Image 1 (cartoon, helix red, strand yellow):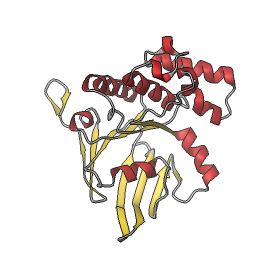
Image 2 (cartoon, one colour):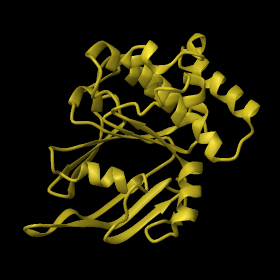
Image 3 (cartoon, one colour):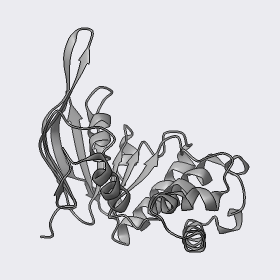
Amino acid sequence: MADPVIRVAGLAKSYETAAGLFPALRGVDLAVYPGDYIAIMGPSGSGKSTFMNLLGCLDTPSAGDYFLAGENVAHMAKDALAVLRNRTLGFVFQGFNLLPRMTLQDNVALPLVYAGIGKETRRAAARELLDKVGLGKYADSLPNRISGGQQQRVAIARALVNKPQLILADEPTGNLDSHTSDEIMRLFGELNAEGITIVLVTHEPDIAAHAKRQVRFLDGEIVSDQLTAVVPGGEAC
């Protein structure tokens, strides 16, 4: 078996509150392998969002180890961590996070600006990915000229522009209607079929059913890690 893209061991995170120290994560162990497609689930306050923030290097753990692409990033220096994160991870958020005064093409190209890639190269890469998600004809449009589902497609294109090993998606369909959510999940399925590893947070069972694995959190701990059941005819349930 290939080495994991992500491996966490004893990962813990606590926060200071008025009532004292609150343990949001309590020693989590998990491995994510190349080609995995994992849905992180759990009720509000279960620790799933804290866990995703740690995976995305948006926060630091209180204890434990986090190996990203073989490197222990739990206590890595900020500059080195930023380089590794930009090279390894792509992010998709519930709120799209597109810059309103930039064209779709420039929004998609933005991570390449931070990577020091030249203008023509990054614009060509962005246009190619907009074509891939079916929005090439809108490359010069502003985000407010397209629908929410189309904006999420742009966000997915932006997540892919650095050719990351892994996409982290936090409630990627949370602001979308059911039909548009299905379209976005089909796109994630296509990307996973191409070999891209995906980890997404969702509280919706029908969204989680698109993943290959479902990992459930409760009270800061993983309580189950199971392959998604498939019924006859190939439908996940």
